[in-house]
Image (cartoon, rainbow, N blue to C red):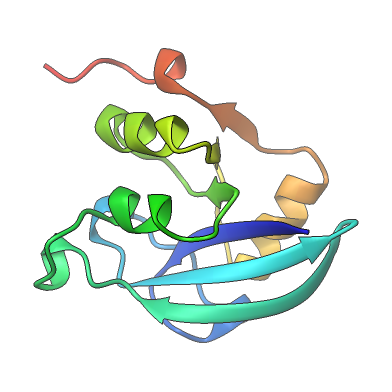
Length: 121
């Protein structure tokens, strides 16, 4: 079983649009995937710093049960936190949660790591 996390703009599960700004995402949708089949979804409110919390979205995901993050893009600090916690990142996605998981399943997304992101100045 693989747990995939997708940052989203709303809490409507598979139909939620992926958030355009990872660092300011409002929700996360977690999807359990087994043998390419989505078994269940769970939406969670992001209580990150931009929502009055104390952690960044990357720190929240690092403490979750996620194995994979699918997003449009993210910064090098988030990449570092996630990869150090064993989370594989796929970027370049767009659409709904259901869409991006299909893109991942079809091998259409790029794996992202610290070497594929420009350094912060």
